[in-house]
Length: 361
Image (tube, rainbow, N blue to C red):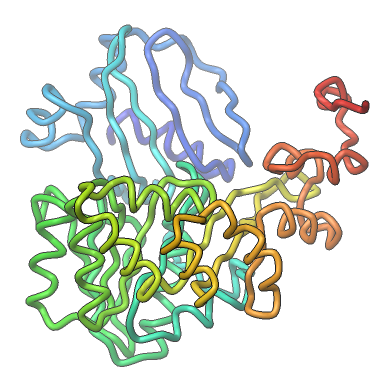
């Protein structure tokens, strides 16, 4: 058994989400958002290199010599993990993210009703956004599972790497991995359009080419699901427009106004008992009013439309956080740190370490 498996098994047994390995420090585990070292010696470069490379194929070893490496690793009795290997000044490093064996459902994640309404569409684009580690892949897996169980569709997913494994139910699910089955997200999208898809999942819209291909897919009668590393709906819209060549930006605005169904931006906030985390979601639905603001270069006014669109399922992040606090679903101290406007949250802060950061004037 690879020696690395012992750390991964420990993480799984302790209900940790990630394992961090780096030179000069002991292995670390992320438990409910906090990073903690385990009782182990500091890893030196030679030892860590041995741990990391003994689970790699020859092709992966060659790739890691030249660049970062992303892949999925599975071991019997240990579990399935998404791995990222990288090089830094002191030597190699790695992060392993645990992937539960059961595909999550919309109900198990307690996602807001607007999610189900958005994915009932047959055509258009839905974006799930947020910083790294905020559960975007988990939310998308639940969305795919819902479509898989309720519709007779051809679902093609492009992932880097493949995380949750979907078995075809009422739909057919084809999962393709960037670097293994396709060269890039853009080339995978190009191929998917020739494979009679109904739903296309783009694991990450990284560049202008993948964004452009995803927009083409949405415009030509498909439901496209994608992710971006943006932290609000407005920043997501701005990122898409800014990613396009200047001469294509007006066209991109027209696409967004007509084909973007909605943006779901999420953060993971600790539960009150500190033993878990809950996804809190800002939701924006594309309406004629928001589309008009977009076309008139007034995206900074979109938050006010989200605020007044509660009857359509829209909600700003601060309002979603406040509702979660009032429902006692999240730790108010942790929620406070995600708020954009901190003032309404100050009365809930109880952590003494946070109080000095609060301006009471």
